[in-house]
Image (tube, helix red, strand yellow):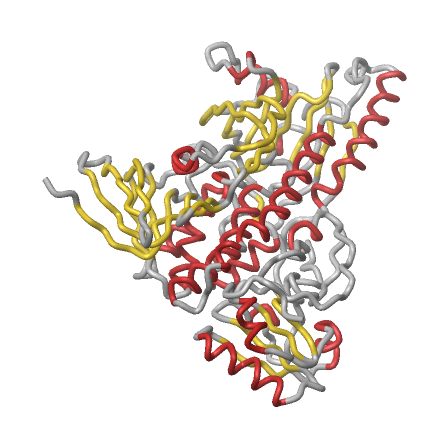
Length: 544
């Protein structure tokens, strides 16, 4: 019997948020793709909840940021951090943060972060992907194996509904199939890093939750007992769905002996509050990074590429950054204007960022556990009060960076990218919290509001953009524009007369890549063809 044969430019394996975003980006770029997922699309245990600023900028680019804003999370729910012994016990300290409605949009971006649990976000992504006729989504299809040839990848799938085998012939495969990636294993790519802890997530329904305690609304309640930090309760839907994370040992992960109800009652600090356990998932908190990002025509993204502690919420958001980096590069090689160095640049650009985000997440996890000498923390004594104040203040200070991380979310740069032409200027400080906008090559092109109400970020995405400011010579504009056109690369010229924006961009001519990062800037182009060859991955050395 002849297997069904599917031909597609790009096969994406795994329809979690990263795989769906990859399909959305490619479809938006006019690239046909096929997305396969062994599950049926339902989410039994949602994990991610924070949509970071750069991810919201991506959603804005793709045209559905408003859907995510309207996901259903209460706009007036306050997103504070609370440190306590339990919800009806002693308060150690709190960090008050505003609701989504009250939180201002940072001056450096047209978007702000959003709370949108995966149980709502993933269906939004699936609907957006499914609306594009260039995107084919096949649920209940399991990836089995692949064979790579000189110009294609032949993958074998199993239709789990019929048992039939399907062959997919694609030019590229993007593995978004999670931390236990089958594709990464078949490639022989190892993960390097370490185990941080064992944990169990308990998804709960607690009707009337905020009437059952006196600690006020919060995004997260962190619990400290005599043995130190033992868990936290995190908001999911802002109403009645919560996720309790219990820290512990490998033995504690044994579901045959794990008493979820006992831990829920310990967190609540009372036994008379009704609750329902929806699901229980044991997991290993780790910091891991793949030794290779690309092998042949197969590329890794998301959890298939890295794992990190969820403290800080950067797992999914790091994966979305990889989608923004990969989409235009796949477009370039498929359309013929991208050279062999374009996909080769994926790892040198993204590895330092992934490692940075991993380090940030581990630092946050250590801050969670920063509760030394907690033996008397639950005692109603002067010593207990002293310990609570000490631990509370210490944890509030050490965890603050987790919630105030704009520099991490949008300040990542590709300083040493082989497809960026440096201009010799000094790099601004790389700070998790503080973000200073810069148009230095490799950085995300700065946001500023244009006269027509758009952001400069709204100009980027479909192709290269040549930003032209006062002082630019028409001959230089034409030279770089024509060199890109001769290469076949999509390019648009935008002349901007605003002096403040010109100062922000720092040069009369600024070339911005399709992912919104600066590729080159200057006054004169010199050898414009050489610049174009570098930024399109056709030449891997910098012109003199």
